[in-house]
Image (cartoon, rainbow, N blue to C red; front, top):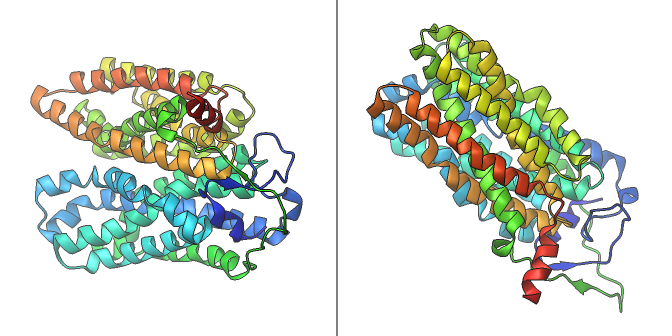
Length: 435
């Protein structure tokens, strides 16, 4: 299989079915035609790309105080930085389907890795807050398009292993998140203590991720023309905005992202205000994030074997509610238990990615659903961390913010059940056309 298969994504036309695997669309090539080297190189590329989807964000969080001092950044601008990633993911992610139609999904992921490498390398030395933000936006644009298109690559090249490959991708993403959060400060010290070097060093990992994608693109054969008289069927237009499943997935994605950003931004402060030492509070956050590494591998494999993933959404939500209850009642006494529960709850992210791959029949459907669910979802997630901070500041405690977090978990469970139903957006598109 070559990357030209991906260049047809989102065209609205589909060739006749080439594989009998259930649930795959006509854009999915026959697994028998896949050269072994392509699968191995793409697997390496998938893992390396996933490792790069969060270090640009979490490395900055680890050195935020030093960056603020070094650039003379105001507290307001520094606070807004916590919402900039979600905004960029939503804004730049909209362009991903159109770019994939023109250049192929693998080509855009390759360009995305290059953008991450360049943005992360340049931003510490851009000179001033404006240059820092512009270079950060470049890196976040690369992350945004890769966020959208990596599930499409999985659906296209691994149609019979959506669960296992999504698990591998999610595990690598969680590992990259944790490594950047844990290693940025000690690496900065080892490089002489300058925050510029501590941020720029992560560009090397992104540059490494470009290599396997270039290898695939260099071996792409010419696009084959259809045989004379060969039949091609126009797929009915997928009216994504009229799909209940698409909206359920978008809201589920947005609410789980809200919970994740709140956890990453405020959980250590909750523990510190309860009397937990600062060092221990940081370790508790690391434990919460590290829970995603093994669970992100197991959960998608389990979800892919189930016809209805709603029960998993309920279970993860229940862990979140239990964790919030513990933070309300005894934040210090049961801190380790609450950290573990919050880590389990945050694994709604790999569940959402898995459902995106399962709720469409074709790769073209997946790219539309992935773009819609993630762009709308990240827009939904923007106000959450800011609202929690405002409630904390004006109430003087964590009662109201924790109540808000628990309250948001209830609709997350509800829409997770709806998104987990065994539906396909193409089928809903046909129903919308008939209506």
